[in-house]
Length: 577
Image 1 (cartoon, rainbow, N blue to C red):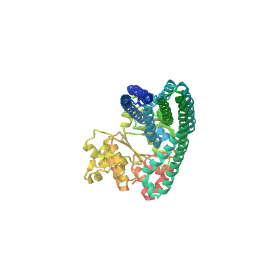
Image 2 (image 1 turned 60 degrees about the vertical axis):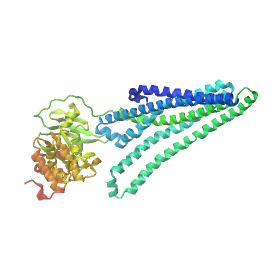
Image 3 (image 1 turned 90 degrees about the vertical axis):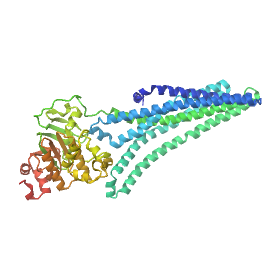
Image 4 (image 1 turned 120 degrees about the vertical axis):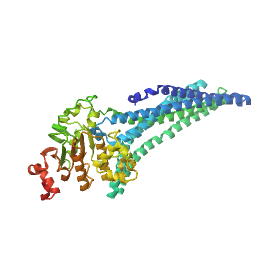
């Protein structure tokens, strides 16, 4: 947690004022038993009602002042803890946005969500408790012992014996329970993962009637989390009984010995009441300390997980922040001896070399797992190559600022992703200044114009998170239109027409050909019909480039491409006429 202190630098006033106010409240609290003793020994004993009322009024004043200081402390704790949580969450989100796909794959979305919510909430609670109780609780324990010594040194021996025993119980129980709390945080990640999968994939689950299996899967992990929490609870449950036994034994000792001293005339009745109150204060303060240990243990585990995110260095980093010159005469995209492998999974691409000219329509085809999506993900530098170089407009992609590189591209991923809002708000993602005509032109090219304006709301039609209120084909066409609105130099369609029927797919390809002459279009697909009329087709097999050329040439010279063609088309349909 100490490493996260930088997020508290704007809250130095609250970090100082809050504990000071709480300390003053604790001082007032320590005086209350003495005033109570004085009321009993001087007022009640002598029947002096006026004295009782005056001292009682003084107690009320101390209570009111203590309440005021407590409220100031509470406000300070709230401002500092909530501000701290907000700054950590914002900083983490900014840092996550610097990650390449490799880091996102490694940590996982569910874990990142848990860290940004549950873990930071734990840290916020720890900051609030730090301000409110970390100074107050130990001060009350020490102060109560000192006040007991001031009343009677002999009776204070009971305090000096009871306090270490209570502290020992706290130490043993916390030592046993701390490992459980660390395990609980990890199990929460698993529950979050399963919950997210089920909520986002509920249609698939229902389609396969797997509700019961998924319910059992969640229950298994939930029960594991529950059992760990129960185990921690069993250990922690011993805390109150054991501490209360020690405290009550001490109180019995105070009353028993105190009675003898009262009979001897060396101690007053009110002082006995004060000593009992001080022992109760010690007990309550110790319980607060135990709760603080639990809170800070959880916060420590959460801080380690948050720091793990901050310590993760993006594998893809900008070398330059200033735009670099673009060579208009260079190929739009060029791969030079490129190889790439995911962590611990060997090479997904091996020694790939090719060049795509500006204005070309290029198809990339190959079997499942052949490396098609991996290849196009290297162009916008979502991943960095393991070997070799990727060039865009004559410059190595590693030399570009991210903004300049990706502004040259319109990327339509395999999974059509829309964001909550309206169709218009989604269309403006790539170009916030796009006109109505720009949007309409993109919708027409993407074959989305008709279904958008068939709805009375048109571009103002609401879109739910993920575009779940639209069909798969509608989402794909809108994501293509969104990319086209930005008028990119390179358009990457990563199997983004898979949900379209053949007629719409053909109309889309025809429109792209006619309306985007100056745009380099890269179409990734497993359909021969989608890529056959491309200016150039790249054939991949097991991560290797096994053919490049036109449809007719590849059918004659590339066995892999021929096999793909014959699996989808009749022999007489294969060659372009």
